[in-house]
Image (tube, rainbow, N blue to C red):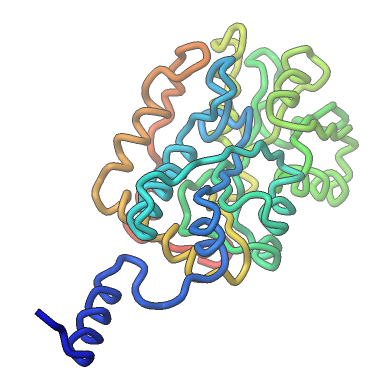
Length: 302
């Protein structure tokens, strides 16, 4: 049967409107992904249990990585690309923002704090985790809070908010600390474990992850009054509203469905690679609130 032009136009419009990506022309990262057939995910190699290498296969795993894969699944539906390929790109605390900005990485989900300074450079998804910045130290060290660090070697990871906070505290309070900035969390803990530093300042959940891979985990504990509360988010290029909308939807849907509880338990309350140790890190009330009311604001903006 011959379809008259008006009926054909209506049929085409209806088809477009029913498409997951609607009738609007794709732009930004969504167009890049559609045209290339590939999304590039930024990941870390030692941010246990958020994003790291679980074994020698050099394949990223972790809590944040699982949420990245939820975004990939959402993109497959939105872009009607069931065969969307995933490429992985290793980032560090110092390279993660530039690699998102210059288009090398499309999405970075790791242990990146959303703050006002970084919001000028990239956009953040709704928050995926909330932490407090504290100290990892040996139980025998005599360090119980930040005031005990005067005149001592203290390590943190370069390019992190903990590094900035620790250096500011050292200057303002004239504590005489020797602040050591290691290249990543793994190197920071190595400095601590080899007695080149008495404490390691970082986000409490990351410290729990480092403690779990220690030679003798029971020798260590996380102490100190939190110096900040911070919300982790996934990074996307600034001003890319279409892509950010898909990322936010994937994460928010995972929260609303309750599936986030299984993901959390998998990484924080069950044995994790590489040593099969349990972090025994219960979900905080702050994270429960974040899951119930997703927001892309930083902790300082709430």
